[in-house]
Image 1: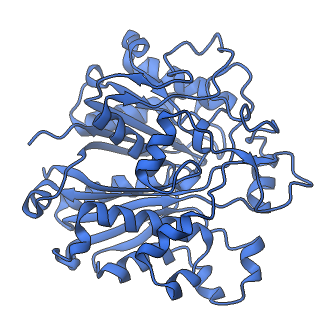
Image 2 (image 1 turned 90 degrees about the vertical axis):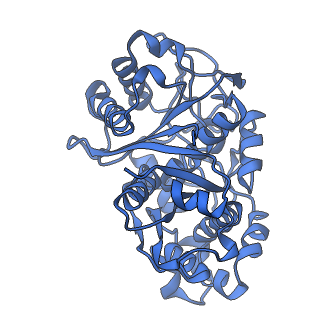
Length: 403
């Protein structure tokens, strides 16, 4: 079986326009949430979101022509900025690759062609294309391998990464550019999640998203884009590329239970983690950090805690588990990629990011959620959970690279 490694990362979030800025913001306990400005708050129960500042446009402009950017929505441009950064970080922009063996897979739920985007009359057909992001990345760099988007709700980019791993292992590709984008703040997004009672209605940005706490009342929408470059070990070594880590395992599974609620007591979540560890050939005893799905909703946080205890037993109490959604919001289709990047940086630095806004503990939730401040902790193996509406679950297993 071919070993799959990660050789490049790129990120656009509410706390930073690059992967390094994003990581520095996480460790500093920065909160990207504020009263949103993309749309009026009137008529909405939720008035807070983790919006990406327009300064990210300068990052996108480093890698893409103005004409290309004008044909996209803000959401897609976030993905393009992260893609350009990741490709440059990996060294693939040197052109030393066989484009026929490079694939592009992105998690795209919706590219947010609505509200203020409708005022821009140019290129309407292009802006409506959910596959515009992978298409533009392929065109820009001459990647002529498989190029498409996948939509599995909040697990979309984790699915994209898992699929990329399989494409490399099968021999179809040497390299896969994989990631995802979040919806931007729109009337439909805010009102829709409010109708489902999934989003916090707390107007205070500093307490609106409180994963694993007693008074949590839902998630906060986050904007962003994330990209990782997956590569066969052979290809990466041949190019002399920097290797961040190994993507040792991944799972993709469906709960076949409910469109919005997770399977009772986290049974499906536990199965996702077990499958990913089995795929990696790694024992639960080897896991050093868990990047939780951690949405700050009543059922998710409870069931994910139960699932971790089911998989790891008593050792669950010794494994730090945090949710970066308290910092960057719930970035939906981008979440799997952005949270994988947090795991990569935790391995690289020996620091695990905190769950900020952690105030009153929930008696039922008694694990180490890395409350409010980062913790020094050697991370050789990390897992990242993504659990989406529809019961679409995915877990990624990342491991320090050993030649």
